[in-house]
Image 1 (cartoon, rainbow, N blue to C red):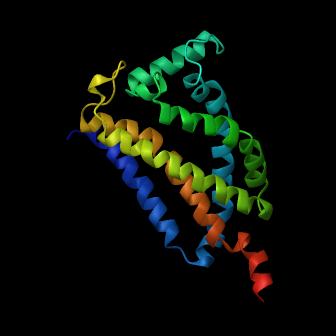
Image 2: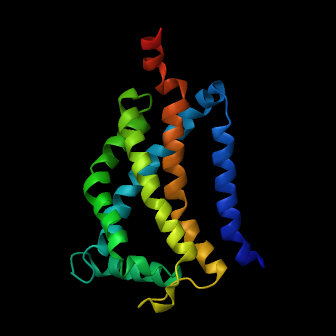
Image 3: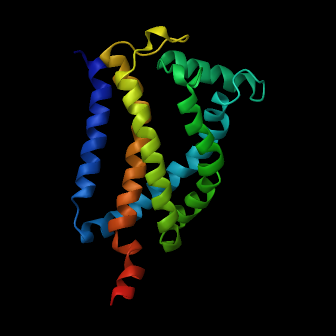
Length: 201
């Protein structure tokens, strides 16, 4: 396996190692990195807004002419380059996830971006836990589909080799890992658990 074939594997491994290190942090360690993570989460939600509006929602109304031609061409370039037929001809189950993104997640993005970029907003804890749990459970079947589905019958070209599957996987994996990081931060960071500690005492 050459360098080009190894980079998607390396990306996934580094993301997994980063996640495992954070999960094994003590509460004191979590307190030290919470500020940095809040900025990461804030930027994640902030960048998710244009991605959802300009790219992801195209899968719900393909060829409807709602989006500018430049964005349509961008989506086609992405789908061809990374061999992602789900974005050009989404299966019903995949389309249901995009509906959830449009009507459940999208209204939450600016609220979460504000809360995390401001920092220390404890009221975001429960909504963030609900969001992260929901998103993680929707991304996981997408990853399984990429790894195990036979795309030979797809109208648009899908991944065939292991390297192609891992390349496409590396696009979706951050949308699993970051929500999981959000969930564990909300659960274990002392900054977001202070209110519950006072109640127990």
